[in-house]
Length: 110
Image (tube, rainbow, N blue to C red; front, top):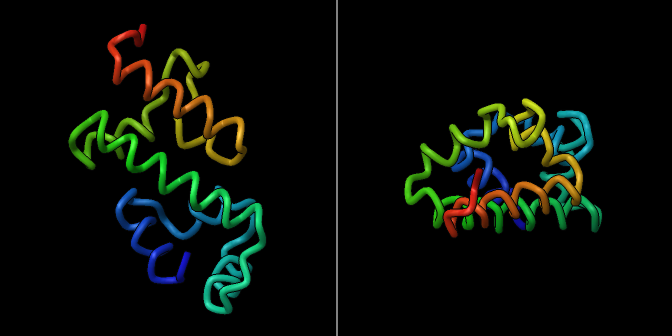
């Protein structure tokens, strides 16, 4: 993903640079440097692609970007009072959040 695409994705999800850096497991300075140089490693690039796919899934489910963005930040009982956003620092966390979106999408969310 290009630097512009990353910034656009962060803007779409209303993520701060700090939040995005946390999702990529790096500090803000390192992230800024790598984005400008285009030198993200495979894990970081994969996380961004997962985030992009999750954003698309969330928009399909909620049909409103603002609602999805608020949901990402809301602590959920099913996640032991963590927000979905808090889980997105690992690939497993992405899977868990995507599964919850699938349950909401098909009406089996409890």
